[in-house]
Length: 254
Image (cartoon, rainbow, N blue to C red; front, top):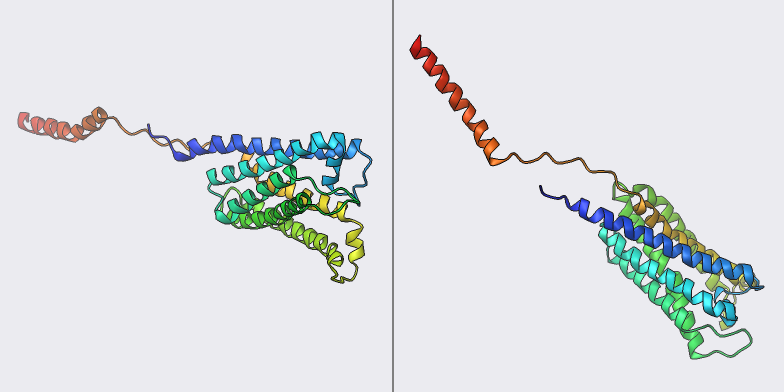
């Protein structure tokens, strides 16, 4: 009996979507743990500042790598489900590369000069913060045309737009450092840590939302009727002939 293609792809997408959710949970738990045990201000201090402590140096890379793996696995899961094109996959991979750069190159500690490692760290952050909202917006378009994922389109668009707004405000806070006057930029400058956490929160939702929808066990497809065997088919074809022959014999006997 032939096997429908959906039966082969749905379970694999189901399993990998759950793995994405598990990896996102690991990343969130790592950051939450650092918030709980380290006395750094979440409003002013960046998440990457945790790496300058012994506990953060051990825990933060685990969370970063877990989130990077979640992004790559989500791209694969979406392609399996037929929801991802290049506009979705490429930004997700770029964001994962950004996370690898962040994990490999620590940011410069406060009060120290700018180093090449610190510049690479900021580049990685820029890739992460800008690529995930782009992927989310593109994915919303794919979900809108998909019968089982249509409900996720509007939340994805809203979270992508919200993340983009947070990113713009975040960047405005850095412009005065380059001599660009921005009215009210001092507020963003003094809340960089809070803005960064807001961006990361929207990005965690953008990754978890489609994975959560795909992790639901798909409804069973209706079974296809079994193809009749050759013997049954031939016997059914012979039935009219046999009936006709029996009718002719009865007429002759009469």
